[in-house]
Length: 555
Image (tube, rainbow, N blue to C red; front, side, top):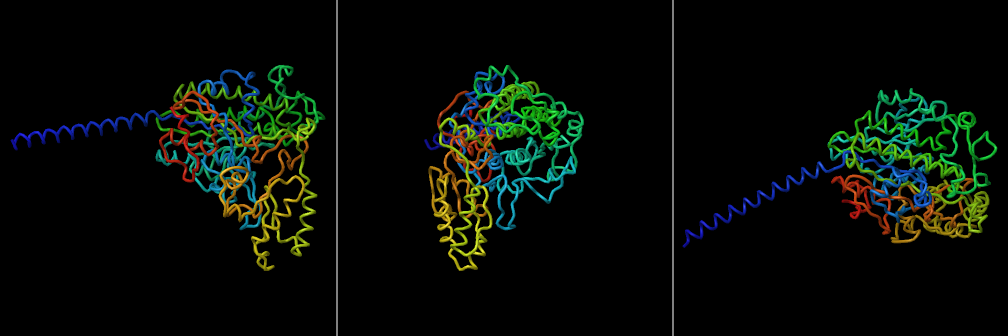
């Protein structure tokens, strides 16, 4: 009986081991399959200053191959928002790709006051590198001020640096911050009298031959032509009248109305820089992106590459002409065509269903306050001169000197900590006194101190947005919030920076390999993008990520 039991036990153990081996083999096979199921190329698209309602406002005028293709074949997150202040280009691009907010990644503005060096610094500026492709200082840029990794960095690490990463944008910061710290390259457009794509020694010592060839093929020159509407202007019923008092326009042209002779106007508008404020800036970016895909062989093997493309012309047009202009409508209709052109090229070279795209924005924009005022909507312009005079009077009367304040920028007041100490003052008391003083000024809605941001925890409201944008080492001592739709800007054109819906609500579209078809009104936030792409690729999240993967997007 014992012998029969022993034989049965051995057979049981043998079968168990066989079963276990089968499971291991199946797991290994699945792992290989999962690797091959990764997209060959991830294309991240950031449309600078794109409000969410541009998707719905211009939808009937879009074709089937651009924005609408992404919506009809991909996933549309309709309630997507920035979850911090300030909503600027630098922080926006960094947050999209790092999966966190300025509190963590450290890009607290486009420019900010450096409390150590006592001077303003630029988010991508780096005096320790050299310009490549130009003698101008425009190439002295790198991502060294961004304190965390991007998902593009993590993909490079995951693939043992075999997966390529390239960033492209008219703006340096729009190319550099998304590409991250270990990118193969980042390229941006230097206009003026050169009209060429450049880089920095952070990435390379010389431009690749294909970039040099692109620069000598007069691509930029070809766009110095007439800018008229793509379609009959009478069909542009989704925007305001062409001639109005709410637009800036170009130097050398009396009225901001179509058409625009860009070649003639370029002489008074910084040469090739005029292209940045026209839809042709986006077309030029698309041309260069397609050239990069071809020359660099992006998406040509099973090792995932990343292409980060930022379309910046939309921001320049919005700042100049406003969000309700005929110019902004034409810019988006032409961008739709450029997206279609890019997708068709990707279909042909990488393959339909072999690449993944996401599209979002770095911030939205406010309707021109002078226009809103004409429509009897509360809005207006901040009187900075009056505020400064009152504040200096307060400082002199209270502390005997205005030098107790080092800097005021980005809606923040920076104190001279050494001066506070020398005057034998309590820092918290000074912060609170200044906060209460500022709260009494016209068109200031809320004021908070650095101490409050560091010692309290907010889960909603503007307080949460401020806290997510507050970096303890880099941000100021007092944080100011203006009234709704009151801005510090010219009385023509639009701007951004607040935590209000017109600045925070932006598109989020996913499309391509590994993406479900659908839509949601559930709230998503910008830091969710990078973890979602990381989850889709099966790689580590960016090291400072605070967002969560959007599981309902992934197929």
